[in-house]
Image 1 (cartoon, rainbow, N blue to C red):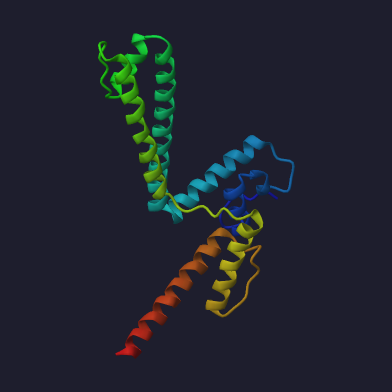
Image 2: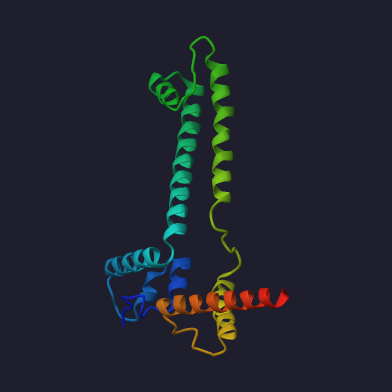
Length: 195
């Protein structure tokens, strides 16, 4: 069987694939990897559009900016190292394009200044990384259990049990909405009782 829809794909499997990158979990048959990649990309895109629109756009933008700054910093470091050995006008031109000032009469001082100033890029990268969702760095066993623990909590709140390993992504999101609604109702009721 190949999971081709969010209606059939178990949430546990979805979570495991997103955390491990092992798309072979989509199928228990011999399936070409390029076919699995296509299926996974479609499923993930559907998931993002349906359930995670705002957060995914923000995370994607942050990741793009971090990647750009990381490559920019790496390029500047390489250019600085090359310029320590010899003067290359093409490399100096690249630094000027990035907004750094370079004067022929103060070449060594300007090179040191550019090196110091470029370290600000690392600080900017670290600031942007603060805006990314926190990654659980515990072992994979704990990651697998975290979705199971979440489902167990949902089961407790809703008052009925279900098979955690077969609950599809769509059903999980539906259960999640039910839990949110039930908690909101309980909080509203508690607020009335306090008055």
